[in-house]
Image 1: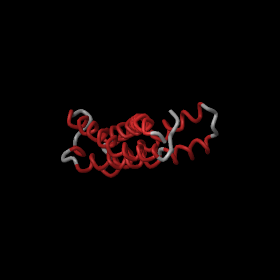
Image 2 (image 1 turned 180 degrees about the horizontal axis):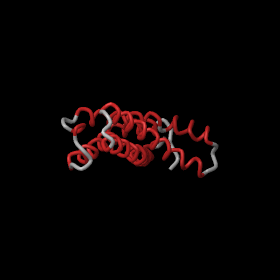
Image 3 (image 1 turned 90 degrees about the horizontal axis):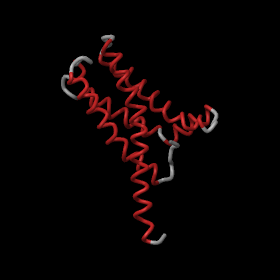
Image 4 (image 1 turned 30 degrees about the vertical axis):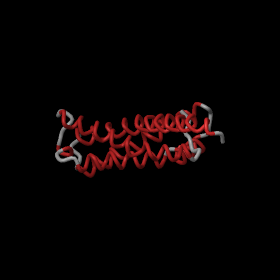
Length: 149
């Protein structure tokens, strides 16, 4: 490949990896915050709240990932399989990073949704999720595994 094509390909890989990570963050983030908020409001145990948040985050990430395939009339099993291949690792890495921030940020698991610290912690978890998942999406994009927006 000629040298002048390198930066353009590299730039598009960076842009696509960032776009893919933001796309994942929206689905996972909505689910994560919703699960955390419900668990906190219902006074679930820390483990129960984290489990609910992780499940909701995974569902949110996969649901947002499946939507574009379904709009293109891809059958449910094929759409889910494609999202598992192109986004599954990113979703798992993002959810893991978010859960670790929630668990290891002192006082966050004791905060309520009515305290600013709770929302600061959620923001911190989402940033950590993005930073953890971006390299995964970059590597997948470089290998040609791209999801549909």
